[in-house]
Length: 109
Image 1: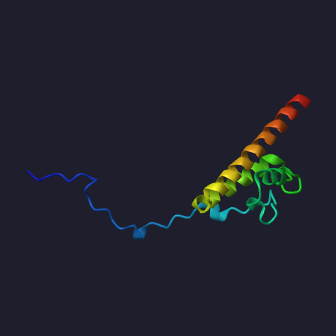
Image 2: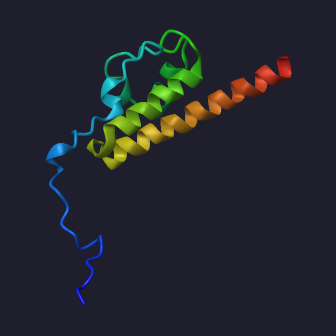
């Protein structure tokens, strides 16, 4: 009786026919935030303050928060542990500010 070959032991065809995957982040072009050059190399409080300002984030600190998260995701492995920690600290500070604004908006309504 002939032996059955399972699908996992079959040879796979080379990936020459598949398209190379493009990363979605390569096509992102935003106009909602305008961070100054070199902002993400500064201290956490400075980053949080700048991203919460109307000049940088006209749509509010939530928009700045998204920009910071995008930057962290985009930087990937290229960030040092110290830089990543500082950016995460800025993210925490900005998050608190967003929560404060939401709370004050609810109490005003």
